[in-house]
Image 1: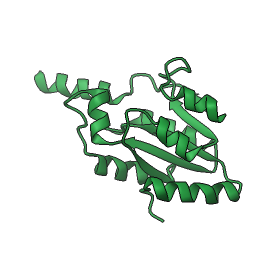
Image 2 (image 1 turned 45 degrees about the horizontal axis):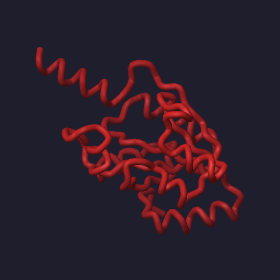
Image 3 (image 1 turned 180 degrees about the vertical axis):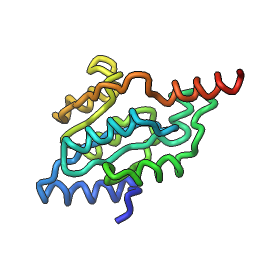
Length: 159
């Protein structure tokens, strides 16, 4: 089975995972420039269950979240890079600004987000609570972010 999943394929696979007693972990992000902070979060996420699926924001939602100059890398490439990582079992597109609709459809047992979020700032918290999904917040790796990387590249280019 391909690691790049459609929503329909993921829902079917989810039902099989549940019947087999597997724990599904879900996380999501833009993954515009993959860095060690992403890798850390994905590895921690994978440790919380049997199967890790990752939602990758499509280009339109990245622009809405990060601004008109982003993404730097198109969705197809970002999705393939994330899918190639050992910790990741499947990748789905996020076509909304938040992952709430995917969470509602997939009903994972665990939802993992970077520790730059809290329950008070997490856009998906209402779905997480309504479905009884366990929330895991992974502390960020200090100084590691795609936005910070973009700033460094731009600053070095100007000098």
